[in-house]
Image (tube, rainbow, N blue to C red; front, side, top):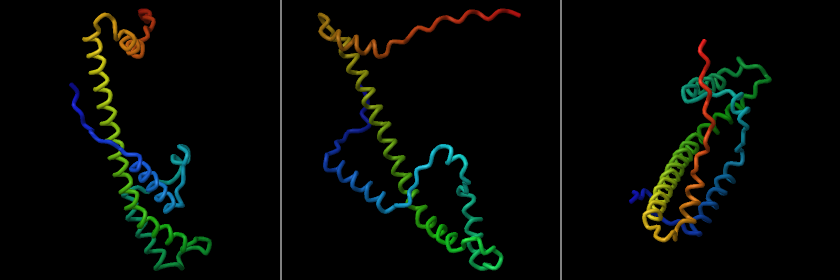
Length: 157
């Protein structure tokens, strides 16, 4: 018998509440963007290690505006820094939730697959008079391996 990692139910009202909460998050983050893989690749990435130098540059810009050209938008730079400070903990919390949601789904799918294997084994073991042949054959055909033509041996040089 399989080990059952997840034993729970998810009521319709809970699903509706979750979807409402996700909609509320999206409403409260109206600046969210959806980048293409190419855009993700081409954008500059500061990462965790770069945050210190960015903070230092924000302090420098605030203390020495004369060092910056008139075309540099110091107000937008400060606004971006404030957004980063407020947004980073939100991102961390959502990332942790995403990891928990993903791990739970992996565990649930593992439970289902292990239970499927049990059902299949039980059907095979108890297939008296071919009563379960349709199910057994459906499973076998679903997992049938296609035969690949054998590769010709490499010619010796």
